[in-house]
Length: 74
Image 1 (cartoon, rainbow, N blue to C red):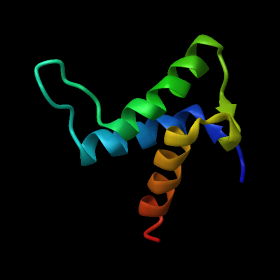
Image 2: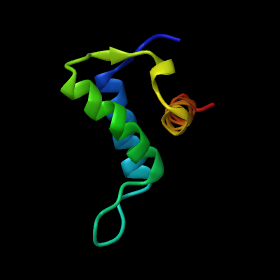
Image 3: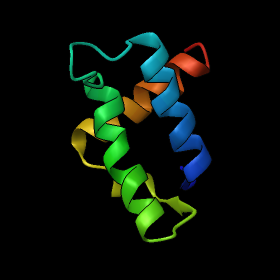
Image 4: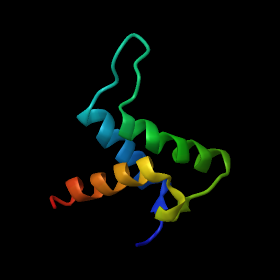
């Protein structure tokens, strides 16, 4: 699998936010968007444009893989 670009990661976060909007007074992100937001923030701080899928922790990788499957209609 090829590297995940920062734009793809942002699209995945927005997908999960649209599918499961923030909730509560604190506007907490759903678990998928929250998991993907951590590597996204690190990419911004480190000025990286992409990261390998292996760079995601378990929950983020599951959220990414689910996003890809749903986006591709699999």
